[in-house]
Length: 72
Image 1 (cartoon, rainbow, N blue to C red):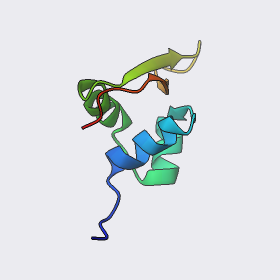
Image 2: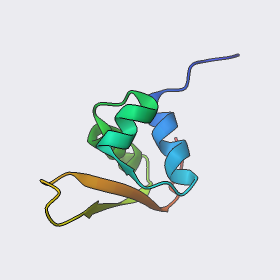
Image 3: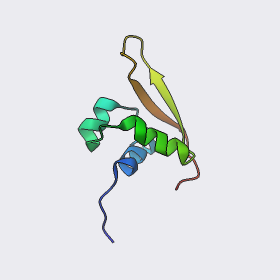
């Protein structure tokens, strides 16, 4: 079966590949305008994801995968 990749799947694949994602990258690459919500879903699925905040970034975070979770 060939199904469209969900935004959650696309975000997870990028994080598993070692990418550091921020809202701008997620919008450009996946059309994902609610990256924090997708990150929350992945954390709830057991993935350990670190939020990085740069000084002067107006509170926007970048996200990096620290540890794979139980999947789901």
